Image (cartoon, rainbow, N blue to C red; front, side, top):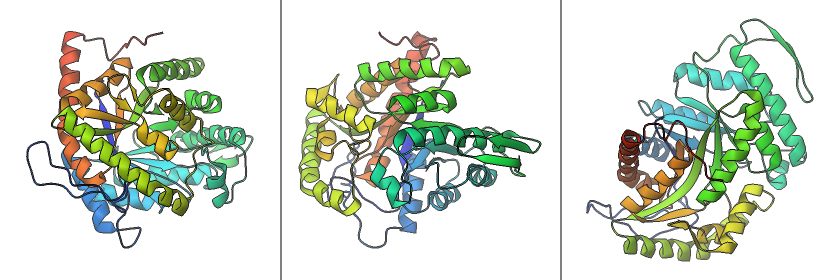
Amino acid sequence: MAIEFIGFAATQETSESGPATPTATRNGGSPQPGAGHAPGPVVQPDYVHEVARVHEASGFDRVLVAHSSASPDGFTVADQVLTHTQGLGVLLAHRPGFVAPTLAARKFATLDAFHPGRVALHVITGGDDADQARDGDFTDKPTRYRRTDDFLDVVRKEWTATEPFDHDGEFYQVKGGFSAVRPAAPIPVYFGGASADAIRVGGKHADVYAFWGEPLAGIAERIRDVRAAAAPYGRNPRFSVSLRPIPAATETEAWERAREILRLTNERFGELRKAFNIDHSEQRGSQRLLEYAAQGEVHDKRLWTAIAKTTGAAGNSTALVGSYEQVAESLLDYVSLGVTTLLIRGFSPLADARDYGTLIDLVRSGAARDARTAPAALEDPVVPA
């Protein structure tokens, strides 16, 4: 199966590390600007359009449009990305519980009708009670995952039913539900979460199950858990890993850049945490990353946990540090476990998205080479015990 690359599309240039030192391209081009929090409005249309076009030119398949209680409307941002590119897709994050599932299904189907085959749903149930409360939701995590389960049952019915349907669930009741707009091809459902409840619900619904960047042994463990949860439903999900590559022409240069990013993050992140009320301490995924960070700063060949430790593992925060060839090799190690989607974003978002084209080419050529020498490797991966 082909490797899918997903980038990240925000509405302004921002990063944990704030203003970073310029970095030169691998091929000796002019230095690229750093990634500080951009001045001006939160929504900057020209930046959205540029970041979308850069991702498409670099060979990305999709970009993630993320969600939080303070974020701009994701559907509008996704439409801007799709309208200003030719084939780039979006992975649109959606948090169940605030929009009726029948309406949410039609919103996704309508977006897909204008941009066929380029839309995917990323289900974010919500692991932060405080962030949920900012939008008026005071349920606990187990309740939210039960609600997500019910939500997705209705969404799939709304997408597929050719006759009016009824639904009588714990959270949603529908009488005579029907949508005049349905996706011509199934809209893929990506699912994130590290708790037992997340794995239970994600195993039932996920087409792609998404993990943060843990060491290889941790990802292998989680793949086994999700496959076991999916088996009773006859499902065979694909898997995604999210990482923050820091490549350079040489390993030494990459580590110099990594240390500068860490220095700037230490200076800036307290300000960001206060401004945006960032606290992921309740999320099992963040807890797992912090546990790995406590065990050591570097895991496997070059998985670096220092940024996760500094930020409290606030989201996707583990990095791969090394030369372009070394980072590509480490990404292929995840592929060898059965991972088919790599969500990569940098600390200088626009410059790194441009630079990652080299990395994407190396990974895809390496995967093609591996497939020729071991044709069954990607189709039937052996996950170590």
